[in-house]
Length: 253
Image (cartoon, rainbow, N blue to C red; front, side, top):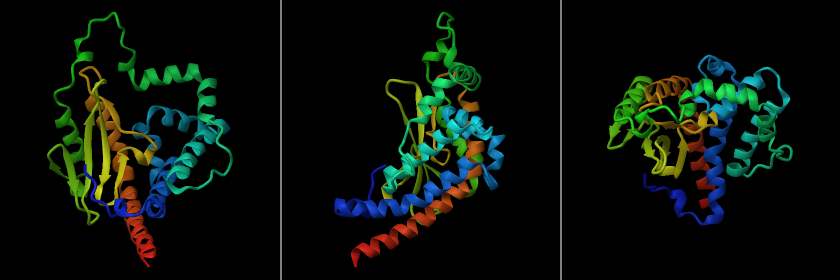
């Protein structure tokens, strides 16, 4: 999606405050989702929005594991450092790598349970692993229409367009050239904003789309969780847009 953002026209040194103004409410929203409190507590029973690694960390963090909690805090702190230029509250220690090293056996059992298609026997003849699911576009459209019907998304070529924020908002798709996977993004071109559709979960939104990957089930689980967080994400976007406009006016004076 080509950007037509006023942000791009700013001198490079003036872009950071405007970018941070837009991103800050979004990252506050992400922190609320990861805390699984309030309207997001139900995600304990609908965890499919989270990427497997984040979901695995959350399980242990919920049990009080200090290393899992630190790993999640560091993931969020890294995002805030990149986009808001906020120094982390303590030096980043790569707690996630250390946690995964300590829980390799548990992780193998977990990932086999949530993504069984990754562990197909290479000696088993399954031509579906090498063929894209021809229903992929229709399945994505069905998921958007079923779970985000209240947000005015309409099909526009290979994307879905909404004006619920007063500026065009898109859900776009792209496919890997080397791997059979489809990724979904949320784009606000007027603000030069591109997010993985799973950003509320501090996760991507990448789905294997070969015939053996249970794409319909993957999408159903993800969009069921997305429907829970999407109102909060839109509110954060709206707050960020207003803050960015104010930051831009401040720079112009």
